[in-house]
Length: 64
Image: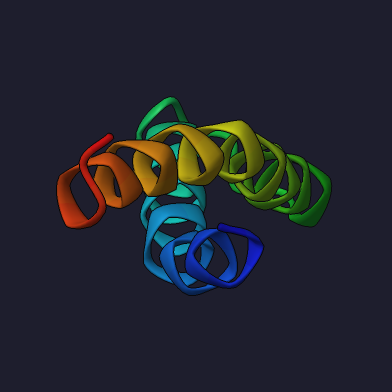
């Protein structure tokens, strides 16, 4: 499941990071530190999210 989670991480983390960067920019936080913090937070949020999504996909692919 680790390989599946790694594959799922790429779109999930980029979506989360992009959403948080857009949120930071829409709040008027246009400095580099705020944008970097939002992007890093999105990457960190993507880790458990991709693990949960990969678990659900694995259950559908290989039912018990």
